[in-house]
Image (tube, rainbow, N blue to C red):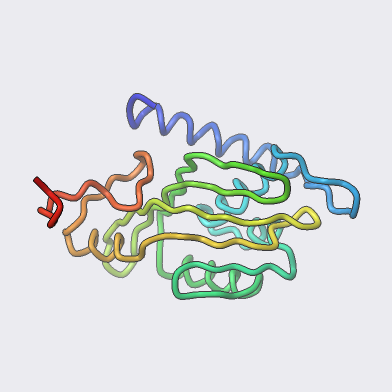
Length: 182
């Protein structure tokens, strides 16, 4: 992408395709295997649920025996729903900028940027995130999200810049002198 406007066009296209493909199901029976494209669509729909706040969309992608984890939390599908409800109550204008999704058999990895505004403070944060997971019976059974929670906290304190919509990195550009700096 050459600029943020190109990224927005690409993201809007992904959103449109997600909504158009949302009605398509991933194979759910024993011998049928989900294709890479079906798994990509499933992952996109799962991420879209966080942007839209849609409980129905989240549950449509989550296996009943799902293991869902991110820093500080390990839970199941119902726990993921409780997290989404909390999110909807405390945050707004959430955007998920999907950078890429890799699929290998029934496993996937996705890199994206998760940006949101805290309702109570009006402060916006954006953090690069990677999630890995596995699909079983046409639903996400394992989802492990890796994100550094210090990014949002330091962005709120004005210590790290907000690089929303740009390529996700573990940390935004950092202008502090480090021991290994020249």
